[in-house]
Picture 1 (cartoon, rainbow, N blue to C red):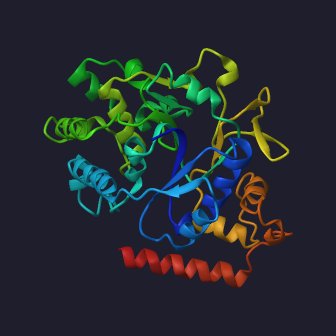
Picture 2: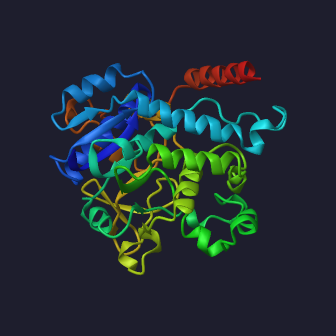
Length: 338
């Protein structure tokens, strides 16, 4: 078992984003730190070729562990009240998803690790995160805890009714799942069974809001809440220099030599997260289409870092024909779902 490493979750659908992330890690975190790609599914032809071309990148292949996390997610989300609502009231709930495979990081080859979602770019070394892991079991850097009560991860009134935990106590445990540091072995087989029993038999699944659809980050927040392990979130730090933004669509950044800094005080950020932007758009961007994603020039820099001759020299908007064709295709897809 190696002492430290990085995980991400990917398949060929997010190939352009994966390449950009791997290049940003190499440049901004370190060229020698090992990276393990957890497969989202079996669409991996391009991913495997990319991994084979990189000395420090491997593919996670413990399929029994991946299946264990998939089954856990499937069973607990099926117990949520919204899963049994009429299809007319809710368009989708838990359509089979493998997002919780990212939790295989707790069963993997690194004693300590940091996980990045594939729709991210690493912006600085991870020394601070690994230092915090000397004192804490989980390290995060996000603002999920600050969401308005009506859209927060938990139904605070229900949690208080069942456990006596106040809203402020619960908020301190809310976090995202797009970037986190931790260590192997925290969620073993027995602990996962205990969590499943609490969620399903004790109805603690109803603590989780999930107002519009299931959310792996909300489930992870529940797990860290009830296991009561020590958590550090940089956005809650008493040191103002450690509090920054991270979302491409919400936070203003300053680009200095393709490294992004928080606009307020030029504080270095751990990563930029392109949350909410489609992998289709990143594929089009990589082909030279102007898709109007914030900081798309930074993405292109890392996407084509090793092959600059392939980088689009000029971004062009889609033609009217392409726009019309895409609109028709989206309409057809919606009708098929109905």
